[in-house]
Amino acid sequence: MMTATDVSSIDHTHDASLRSWVASANAPDADFPIQNLPLGMARRAGSNEPFRPFTAVGDQGLDLVAAAGLGAVPPSLAELLRACQGLGLNPLMSAGPVPRRELRHALVAVLDEKAKGDWPSVLSAALVPLSSLELTLPCRIGDYTDFYAGIHHATTVGKLFRPDNPLLPNYKWVPIGYHGRASSIGVSGQQFRRPQGQTRAPDAEAPAFGPCKRLDYELEVGALVGMGNAQGEPVGIAQAESHLFGLVLLNDWSARDVQAWEYQPLGPFLAKSFATTISPWVVTMEALAPFRCAFSRSAEDPQPLPYLDGEGNRARGAISLQLEVHLETAAMRAAGVPPHRLMRSDFADAYWTFAQMLTHHASNGCNLQPGDLLGSGTQSGPQPEQGGSLLELTHGGKQALTLPSGEQRTFLQDGDSVALVGFCEAPGRRRIGFGPCVGTVLPATGH
Image 1 (cartoon, helix red, strand yellow):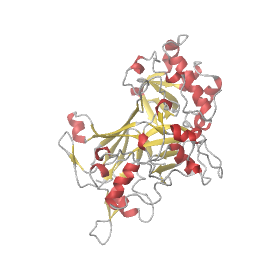
Image 2 (cartoon, helix red, strand yellow):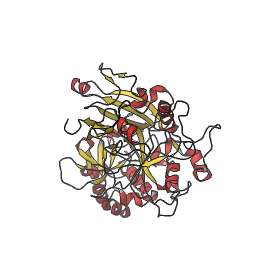
Image 3 (cartoon, one colour):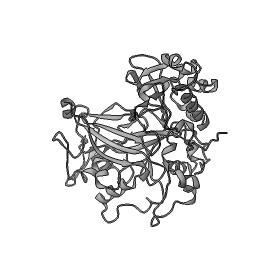
Image 4 (cartoon, helix red, strand yellow):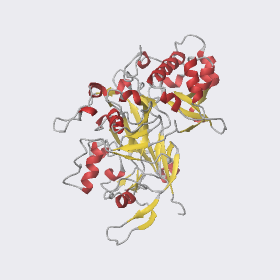
């Protein structure tokens, strides 16, 4: 019998030999094989239909409401899926991991190339090419909290400002975070104007107002909350996994010059609130089960306090997720030059797990809600070439990067597009991916 806390267990849906009758799902480099089945909200491009829950399989999107009407899922799941129409995945999120697991099993049963019955013919009317879909935010995001769990990023950036003391005393004890702006979160394909704000030059007596000159990206992973918790009722570390719905890629765009002036004495404000881009497909916690790995701390570091420590988190709290950043300039786009990969890192290096972040967030009685977004903080690797932001890769803007096109960058210019890429691989397991997470910088208003 399924329980509410076994989201990291492996079952027949993870079998690497599974193949789908949707032929494109069987390609070795497909982001969306039958072992993935991410969830999102979409509609046919150019239509005025309400957004509906979809899953992605190969290069096709399966309309889950239509599939439910064709008998592909049990009636109880059909009701949940219909409740998501025009709203987002929140009704499914709030129902917890058991219905989500049941949905995964039902979809694998009808998409398997060995499925009993004539499902390819039955479901053909519910399949839409991904290229013909308009995607939107997967859920209503009521609140957004951005953590700082990338220790390599925290250390490298800290050295730029505090060479002798890069990490502040609390970093290794508490999952640091700040409250972000939910209203400016968009999905892949988001275009946003270069932000304007106050900055002050080192030799200036007064600040000036104008377009940001040090615009940056931040490579992050986002976790979406499934079940919420009542105000005043914390979530223990042993239960935290059952409150996580799935993961997305997240680009926390940052105006570094605005941030440097405004963050004293409080945290990020206008330097972060102008735009955040996430990938539209949510890779569920169940799909990630084969890529879970042990979480541990160096013996030289303080061990997590008891409320942030648990047997399950130690055994499989981390996730091996390969992350990349690709940059395409306007000139590269015009010349047909492909985007250039700037770096790669592994989310398994994060200093805190999402279970620890969620547990800490709720530890004071804060009531998390279905659809709340938790950002991981910038996920850099231990080597200098693995920086998850231009701030790191250019050493604070002092050493420009030279691109294959011959162009140079210290920070982003108008017309630049940044693509985050994420995928999971493990021996004997089917590779799964997250799909696109792309954002493009437009000129500031009036410029």
